[in-house]
Image (tube, rainbow, N blue to C red; front, side, top):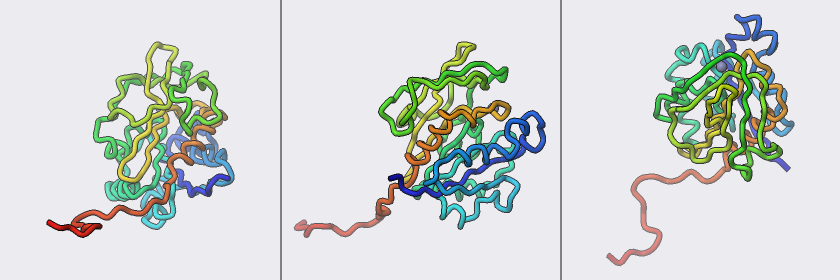
Length: 241
Ligand code: ZN
């Protein structure tokens, strides 16, 4: 029933190699944990910061329907040329799902046009993500909320343009709230920002989180409409002027 989707999961893959506490949670990397939970109709490829061209060659991006992005400690190392390449692919219709600390990635900030700054606190507190748009395809199969016993807090104000659609709003044990599931379009591309996923917590093994990511991939996949023609246009009807 579901259309096949070609997924590329990009991971900075630094915390897992340098920090034993992170490696314990994600021994094969965050990218593998996310990718191995995706359903069969998603064909998954991985791309890593330290690969040639960060694993995001022109060819790889042309063969990607939806790109997932997890980065944190090395946003500055991502080459501008690759950011521009991903940006152009999004405008052409590739879906982009930005996860957790990817809010500060060059590609997300370029697409949003704002600072994308926020409040944070890393003590491992409870997060409850409330579904605020229950009819949305991204929350298919999800209850009224998703509860994560330990997460990093991200709090408002989150400096983003108002989302086209807001799917989740998070509440944190410490009292803050956050727009944690946000949809935009840029050009022909669909973008979803999904907040949870701090590297020291097993968030990507949570079956609701996995389901949201899988739903978001299907939602963000290109719909295959004809490319619009821009510029000087011949009239479709005979003009009498
Ligand atoms: Zn984090």
